[in-house]
Amino acid sequence: MPWQPLLVLVAQAVADPTPIDQRLLLLPRSPAESGTVLRKMAPDAGVIPREAAALVLLYPQDGDSDLWLLLTVRSKTLTRHGGEVSLPGGAVDPDDDDLVATALRETHEELGIAPADIEVWGNLSTVYISASNFLLTPVVGFLPAPPLLSPCSLEIEEVFSVPLGRLLDPATVVVEEWTLDGTPMLVPYFALHGHKVWGATALVLSELVAKIRQRLAES
Image 1 (cartoon, one colour):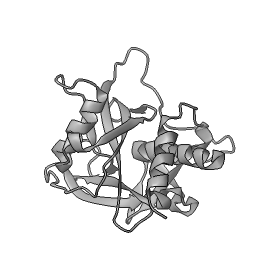
Image 2 (image 1 turned 90 degrees about the horizontal axis):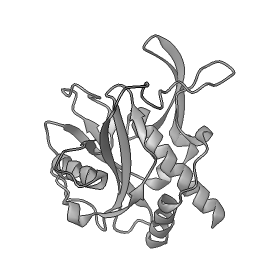
Image 3 (image 1 turned 30 degrees about the vertical axis):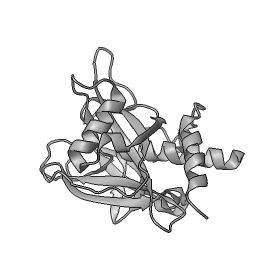
Image 4 (image 1 turned 120 degrees about the vertical axis):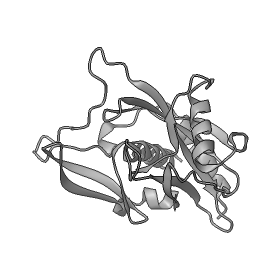
């Protein structure tokens, strides 16, 4: 089956404003029976977060009926989120017209992909990242062919791609008990390409997965 029908379905899923049940998202929770969410979802009163944007970039591969998602591993030398798997993105620049422009500019700076080559489908829900006090807007975009990459070695240690089918496979999600900042918690993550994709990136991707599953159920 060609990938075009999947492209239409995913674009429709992204455009659907129906809220996703929080229980479907990859969020750290208490090991206790209550299963309380332990992620800080918003800044404290009086704290103004910095705006940021990231790009969820999908593209086809020749001869494959799936769409592929691009992920990066941040350089270990970075002071914020070093060594973590992330989506290309970063803080808003004063010259950016909007958050879409931020996501496209950062992707160009990090990976060398021209903004004009990317078709923007829409945004997912904003995510608060307490460690860096960022309010992140995920932008979903499509590239009609596999990208020619020129990663910035100062920021990017590795670039890899995964098929959407892998993200949609429940077996890809693993839950482990971790202790973070002295608090034991159950942390869900996507096991992808030898990496544990957790935190804000997992939260963004799990919303995309939930939206696609919801659309599949309706079609």
